[in-house]
Image (cartoon, rainbow, N blue to C red):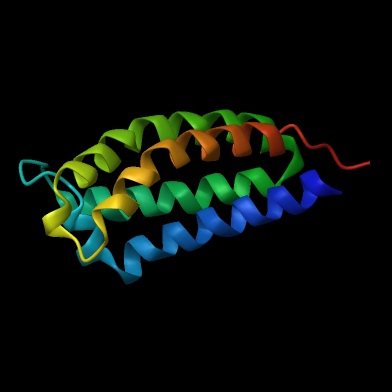
Length: 121
């Protein structure tokens, strides 16, 4: 039962984060280094990817692979979190929160790999 709840919570978190890329696109564009090409396209694409990964986590036949792909995605976006922690003056967030977010990314990876193994009976 806990894995099922964890699965739905994670999927909800990822869907919310994906939608945030469209609703708060200014924030996500600002999170990218200034030399990033096509920042709006990257923000929207990453939002779509997050939503699709979450939906694939909810569908049993794709759940396991979606968990692995989500973990890879979280590793790939980790440099953006590092950039944000190194440039806290660009955000309306406490610097400490940006640094705490870094190890939390590993918790998210563990979480998605754990719940993506969940099989309904």
